[in-house]
Image (tube, rainbow, N blue to C red; front, side, top):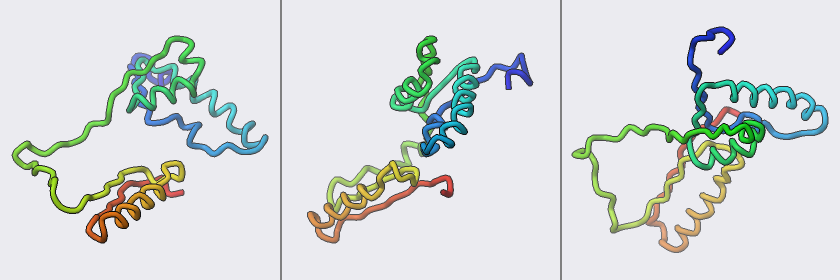
Length: 142
């Protein structure tokens, strides 16, 4: 982008390094991924400003892009914005009654959504059939 628009200021907002989302494989896969991973690191380091969505991602960013970290690149944390309703529209959270278990994640194997369902099952065993569960999220279609 900086080559096409040399005067443009580039901000890179990282949710998670792409190379960590690709499953590691054998020798052929490593040979295939090596230039892509190097390009990702070089292109990321070319931005004028780099932001990450959490302190956790900042740690992962530093470990993944070690050469950028050694050069002193420390991305700032900018949490994703959440639209909040007007204060008058908010209702107090009920402290009485059955608990509700809410899990909002990307649907990825590493998120271990099965663990959330096991926790809900334990909650049902402890609370009877009064507790509720909700699971929401999305994925990349794989």
